[in-house]
Length: 189
Image (tube, rainbow, N blue to C red; front, side, top):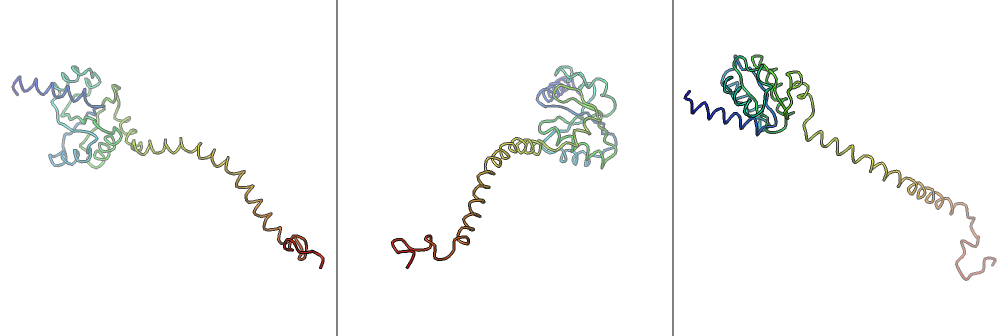
């Protein structure tokens, strides 16, 4: 690889480190080209996956201020740059690694913090961002709904009591009482 090509590769990797929310370093030894394509499809829009050279990646990581990869850059390496939902990317990597044992998740960085392979597996067990936001919205809406029910309960109970009392009234008034006679007619004829 010519020096200019190496510099361009370092610049591109550095830009990807800077533009992404995180990066997960993997070892891909033993995976075929078709399996790598399948992995890229499994990651979808959540991440981009690229095979990298360790020396160039080390330089690019330093340029981007990422020091967490220094010890992990051993052997054939590839990086999943997280550009979307980190949970979805972690699930894609975990599920693919379960189905394809040669893929080894080494660790990574997320929002400037180092994460281990075990933390990535735990993150993959989380629900997606949309599901978590929906649960949060439901939890925030529940107190308002409970308050509305509490305020409506006495009024509804009063309406039921008055309705029951109204149903009892015609049964309690005997026939021929002043309540049954039309207005203007004598009650005692």
